[in-house]
Length: 172
Image (cartoon, rainbow, N blue to C red; front, side, top):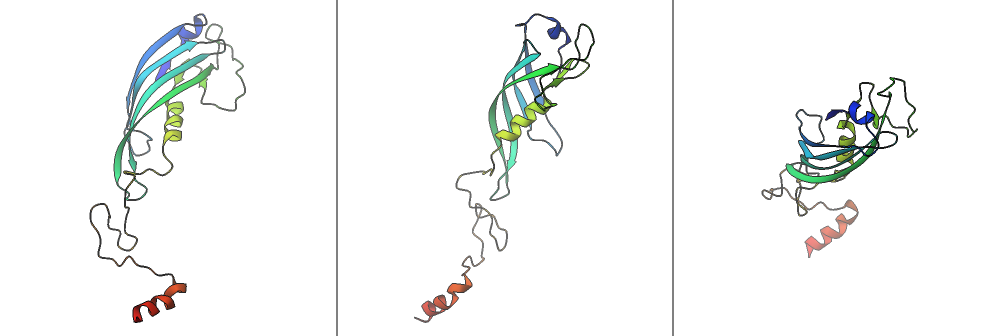
């Protein structure tokens, strides 16, 4: 997801480049399996405006049953990137202080979308991923998946404060 934008930075404001993003990820430290979609880069006054609508496919782990399940989502990305060096003179450029390094184009005029797309993916992930809204989860006693079958554990745990009342109910 690296794009050389040196030529685009030399062109007049409003110049446009279109790309098709197709990226597959491997390894354990990833927030998605694949990302695909159109990417537009527009030359603006201070840098480059990136607009993209990407489809993200990933496998999440259900927070109830701990099973892995596939999911797909669509992200609308709009971010501005600022060059660190002027492509015509090679002098260091001032960029707006936003406190973020992610929106910078490196000294080789390469715009890296990896960090921004990863941030969008992470913020789009559900806080508590569920494989199904009716997921029954795992048994707290034996760890059996209640979605597959009922376990043989005794599910009734009685609060010790109510134990005397429960004993009374058993006697009658």
